[in-house]
Each structure stands twice: as structure tokens, then as C-alpha cells.
Image 1 (cartoon, rainbow, N blue to C red):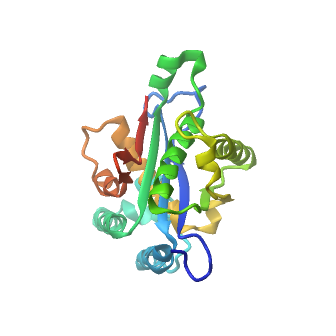
Image 2 (cartoon, rainbow, N blue to C red):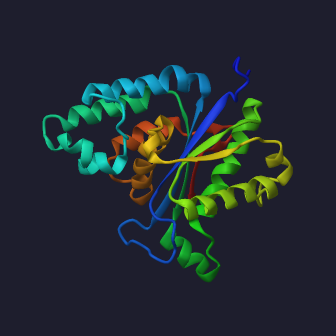
Length: 249
């Protein structure tokens, strides 16, 4: 059921972790992860935005701070106060609790770049293209399952060329389908893609970012303790034997 404004029932937000290039492989992080968080619009308005703003205002005098995973880990910029040993665990615990209780569905596609190159050599496809394909296939399954066709998606802008590349691949999949999902299934959907820079301080893209890194760490080494992953994994989409979690190859 759509809300009274006639807008979509759901909205989604993309973010990524790692470099999608196959020309430069970081031995310590040979991985590309695409993270998509999907919210019910009403939850986003009534719960996500105010809860995140409330969390920020506990630590800053305004809500204009981006909850950026890398800056939090390194205690950079507005997170420099996390260098104080007594404050960091409190902040991290409260952030973990926030990510645990907020309502969202998570779709994660991870490409192990070195393994991908080793297996496919010169025929290795772009990690971004693969991750986007895997994610959108699962989005089709999700939308069909809830009887909806509309899912506007916001992605954080990475620059004109990068945005154009993503947009081209995105709409090619939506128009032509994939090896597993026909073009007809995709063409029933209305999933406009919008790019917004970090300066817009969008709660949804920040949550996608906060989900992406712990998922990447788990893919790299699932034996290491990873409390953040234990939290976000509970939100990974699951229905009728289909999972929102995909790691390739």
C-alpha cells in the first residue's frame, strides 16, 4: 500500500567499499563490495532520519556530520574525539545498538578480485558490473515478493565519470535483464537512480556505508570476531531460499 503522497512504499541507498578496478589489486584488501539498504519510506521518515539525528546531536552541536565508516575507524576529522580511550567504546556501542534496532533490509554483493582474475583471466568482468548485477537480481526478487514495482535508489556521487559509468551499467541491466532474470521482469519495475554527494548528508547512504565495511571484513576473513557484522547480518534480505548476500567467485 502506497502512502498518501503517492510516493513509492520503499526507497533504497547504495554505497560501496573497496576499489572496483582490476588493474590495481591491493593485497591487503583485494575486494569490492556493493551495499544496498532498503527502507520502508514511512520508517525512513519516522524512525531512520530522527534516530540518526538524535544520535549525532548527542555527540555534536548539529546533525551535519557524515557517519563515515573510515573516518570513524581512524578517528579522523569530526571523529577525532574517538581517540580518547574512555569515549570510543561508548560511542561504538551506541552506534552498534542503533544499527541493530533500526528497520532496514540489506543487500550485499562482494567480489573477490584476486580470485576473480585468477579464475577468468582476460575474461574477468568488471567487479562493479558483477556486483550491481547480483544486487539488482535480488532486488527483483524482493519487489516481486512484496508486490511492488517502485524502488527509487540514491547512490553517493563519486564524480562525473564514475557516476556516468554506474548509470550506464545500471540502466543496461534494467533494460536488457541478466542471464538469470529476463528483461521483461526488469521492465516491470520503476527504479530511478539518483546521485547525491556526501555534502547532502543523507542518512540512507551513511547507513549503507556503515553496513559495507563490516561485511567486507567478514568476506576477507570470517574467522575474526566482527561484532558490527554480527549486527548487520541480521538485516540481510532472506525470502523463499533467496538471500541478499552474494560473494563471487
